[in-house]
Amino acid sequence: MSLLPQFGSIVPSQTQQLLATNYLQWNNNGGGGGVPTNFADFAQQYLPEIYEAEVERYGNRTLSGFLRMVGAEMPMTSDQVIWSEQNRLHISYAGASQANGAGTLSVITLNPGAVAGVSNVISVNDTVVVLDPATGLEAKGIVVASVLGAAGTITILSFAGTTLTAQGFSAAGLKVFVYGSDYSKGTTLSANGAGNSAARTSIEPVLTQFSNSPIIIRDQYVVSGSDTAQIGWVNVATEDGTDGYLWYLKAESETRLRFEDYLEMAMVEGELNASTLNPLTQPGTQGLFAAIQDRGNVETGFTAANGLNEFDAILKNLDTQGAIEENMLFLNRQTALDFDDMLAAISSGATGGVAYGLFENSEDMALNLGFSGFRRGSYDFYKTDWKYLNDASTRGAINGVNSIEGVLVPAGTSTVYDQVLGTNIRRPFLHVRYRASQTDDRRMKSWLTGSVGGASNSTLDAMEVNFLSERCLITQAANNFVLFKGI
Image (cartoon, rainbow, N blue to C red):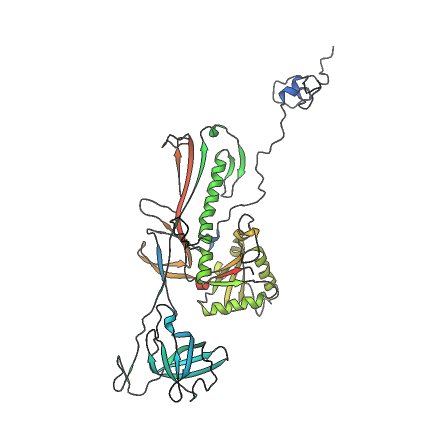
């Protein structure tokens, strides 16, 4: 009698070995009518093969990192941040109008009162330039009379010897600025101009104040006590560098990563709550996009076809602002390609080139951070993709009318007095302020509540993982920022 197993027979093995003699055919219903005829059908031992490692089909899913590249984070103790920004140094008025005065004199109405807090400060004997953008005409003259304050009129004697009207100037839309003064010999200055003297206005600097308020950002992950007993191991490699086997806290890890993204997304997308119908009392906060649209520059419809001309127009506008030498471009895919096409048409010798000044002239450092550099005019630019604008779950799903396609951020800093540190410090134009004190740091808080997973502070049969942050974004000198938008 043969001891070898026949087809269909089962001989258990004493160890975990894959043998032909201990194979169970789970799909054999030989009895007919769905009735199993052997233990193989009953055991259903061999289940589908399961890969224990997650497949990262979306790659690195986190979107944060933009603010870490361009800014800093600093504590604060108040419900509001207020900062002042300088106005222009020289005296200039736009939108002025003119009419004939006595003889060859011209009376120019500056109308500075149209802008809150601005008044006429041009004094007698100041020399001025009058520009007419409509006709391209230019005249220079000396002020012989001035009505100070919000009324804003000056009477000038043109050095050409005729009125502005006779020279062909438009009646309105003029620009006037002071370039110096011209006094007679032996003149003294006084407040009333009596005798051999001339009145002179003392100009007080006017600062423009801005403010922003922090918002409280919260999230929570909850797992019940029963579910914590169902251990299911998964080998994962998360975006924060964690690698290994996780079970129910895998979801907590993703909640934390999502919350960290919200910390940046809220600073970028934040809006002030101006609605009178909204029953919520939260004032909101002004994020990056809102600040640039309110106080900065917006470039609409940047394309490769006329990219260089449009980009040069941006540079000319930057010349009229702070003219920060080094700037960073964070772009979506299409706008980045438009810049590549634009740069491809520029010779690397005479009109353009590569620059890495912001990165200590290290090409490796720049490329490791994903930046490529180029120089145009007197400006250095460092270009990189901004994942937030490419991700399909955020702004990457739509490219079209009024869409955000990129942002130009100056790499400069400003010197301010920090009341917390008690000293002057240099801050990036773009930085985050978060609430903190000696007893509570609200930059990024996390704590456990419940009665599971180490927490024992309530009767809840669950573990609650709580996340909280209170912060706002400070966008200083927004006139040096550029927001790229779709047509």
